[in-house]
Length: 101
View 1: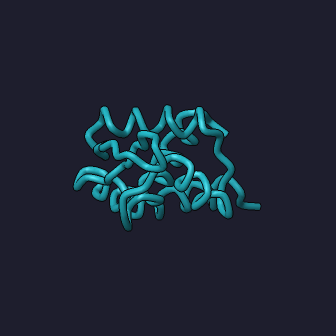
View 2: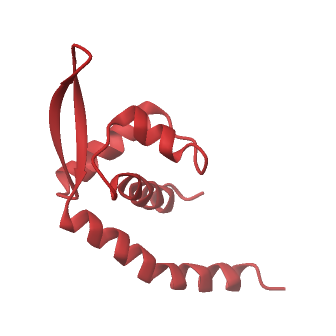
């Protein structure tokens, strides 16, 4: 798969994993696992990129004697999910064109 296309899809997947409530890395991976496999290194790269883009915020909290980072989706992140839903029809049209007989 084209790396840019995959990158955009994975960004939206991560945003969707936290849209219903704050979450942390291991839980995000666990929640996504039935749909897509993702390594921790890939996830944390995506989370950092989304944070820098203003699509999520990060807070730390003590959990079990360790600091844990919790990720919170912003209005911009929610907007990206909505944009993706709007764009999906175009993606499916392209797919139908490419796979036509």
